[in-house]
Image 1 (tube, rainbow over the protein chains, first blue to last red):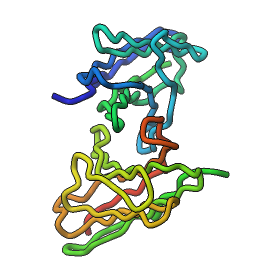
Image 2 (cartoon, chains in turn purple, brown; image 1 turned 135 degrees about the vertical axis):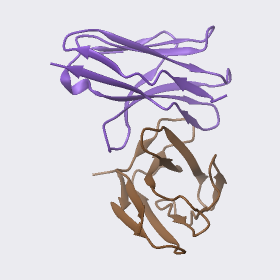
Image 3 (cartoon, rainbow over the protein chains, first blue to last red; image 1 turned 90 degrees about the horizontal axis):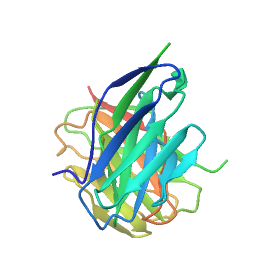
Amino acid sequence: RKEVEQDPGPFNVPEGATVAFNCTYSNSASQSFFWYRQDCRKEPKLLMSVYSSGNEDGRFTAQLNRASQYISLLIRDSKLSDSATYLCVGIDYKLSFGAGTTVTVRA
Amino acid sequence: DGGITQSPKYLFRKEGQNVTLSCEQNLNHDAMYWYRQDPGQGLRLIYYSQIVNDFQKGDIAEGYSVSREKKESFPLTVTSAQKNPTAFYLCASSPTSNQPQHFGDGTRLSIL
């Protein structure tokens, strides 16, 4: 079983919609979690860290549920520029990347 | 500007040839990493180094080698033993191994 698993999508949503997706992790020892964004044929870029209490950065909200071992990302008021693959990452002694969830925002 | 520089951006390998991908960072990060990404797939860890002169195998180290003689540099050699080297190779660094990583913009390796 992979350490971090994501629904690959694609999630195809209209501009202005809200989209949310989860990532599950198998290693309960994982200490920290992050969401990265990767555009087609580009390197991943850090989007936000995920804290136990949940955190928000503009239109993006990340939450961690340790009891059920998943983290979530919610995007409100989707923009065309939000179209990307979102990678979930957990850390124990190294980073474990999920395979990514593809989001396409259409006009 | 501080950052991670990978070179070359595109690389072609002939059959039986070893090639070396460069990764340099000026962020003063202790930890450095190499990943491979195949089309439509996630990142797979090849090697990582938490400190100078030390490195560990990741999940897919066979057919690859690395060195970490300087803090700033972590070159990856794709040897002829790697039979399917065509992929997007990403180098990353982080202040320590349990902090988020910053990525270079990658090297695309293809077989001639």
